Structures are given as C-alpha cells and as structure tokens.
Image 1 (cartoon, rainbow, N blue to C red):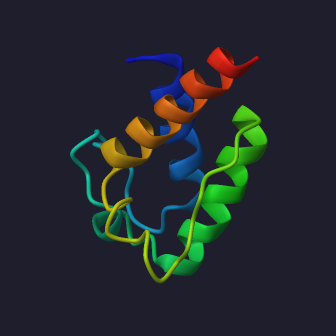
Image 2 (cartoon, rainbow, N blue to C red; image 1 turned 180 degrees about the horizontal axis):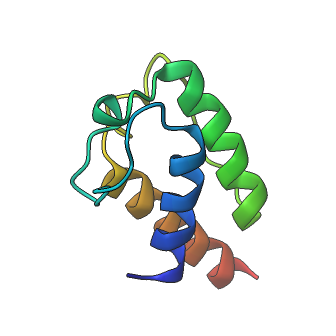
Length: 86
C-alpha cells in the first residue's frame, strides 16, 4: 500500500461511524457510514494533510468519491500533479 493510500485510509478511519477493520480500496463510503457532510470534512482534512486542493462540490462529486479507492486515486493524481508543477 502506498503512503498516500495509508494516509487517506487513516483519515477515513477517524471519520467512519462503522467498523474500519476490513477497509480496502473497494470499500464503499456508505459501508463506513460516511455521509456527504462527513465527506466534506474529510476533503478538508486530506487537503491539509497533502497540501492540495480537491475540487469538491457535495452535490456533484459524491458519486465520484464513492469508494475508498476513488478517493485514493483522486488524491494520488492531485499529489502527482502538484509535484510536477513545483
């Protein structure tokens, strides 16, 4: 597991209302009982942790960020883009 994936999963674990014992990239946020308001807070935490900006609109992005893996992929892409731009 990459450092980005591990850090994203740690952030998700702090906000999950359900058990995170078997969390994986395939895990749906609904299964972790993470709702849209929780996701907004998670996005802020991830942005602070990685020094990135995630374009996020709770009304539009929720389906794009529906699984742990989709969040990891988005963050990894933004981290890579940020490093290339620096």
